[in-house]
Length: 361
Image (tube, rainbow, N blue to C red; front, side, top):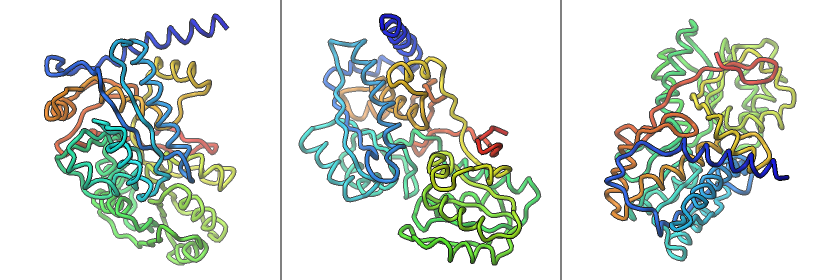
């Protein structure tokens, strides 16, 4: 027990040193009195992803408050269940009852529901998932690397594989429509599109339609649970196996694909377009010491979100926003630097599936 305690303390000390960010502290204030809100996905089909993000933020909060007992940061946590209605209620509570002065938000569904309110309020918002609308130079900062730029790179990569036509299957929601448009920009070939409503449960009909296109290549741009259900039906029907490819949604929902499809070796050889996110060893050690498990997907983004908020803090809202815009540091998930519309600059990483597992190309 004593050895575990020392390992935990040692990991905390190492990570606190690493996450000291390279911002201009002459423009920042002591975070004493800062009150953050976190809206995550803690119920419903994507709860596992939201819990990962929350745990990363909790780890950062615990480490910071242990190191700064005279100026602790408060963080209240609410659940959106990946629905706009719950997100709106959560935001109103955080603002009107808890009186937060900065928000960390996880889901696309949530930011789409509260966007007008948060931009009117003007408080800093660190956003995990992609926005449904086109990002602008405002107070919302996308800390997950810019998916649009990465999707464009993914399309160019597929063009480079010699493909000129493909079938694309995607969910009919704003974020996926933007992803597909960016992919097509990079691909520059012709496509047959199969668009599926977000409430759809009959995937066999769409799978039959996809098989009927006789695809040389087929790709999905879908929320993980839908994507897995569609692909399961498609592979049951298809008599030949085309080139299969998945965008970054596959990475975030890898466990959903495993749960629904079972043995993922059926997807071996598929191409997956994602972002390079290399967790530091110190962060991995600290997470495992705290939660007893390896650091999962998005936990590092939650961790960096909290630290970004605290390390750039100023009691003057305009200065706080300016500090975030100009941040440039190495977080647990890699370099954090924002472009002109507040999206984190991405580094695209192509992957493939081998033996049912993701492997970098």
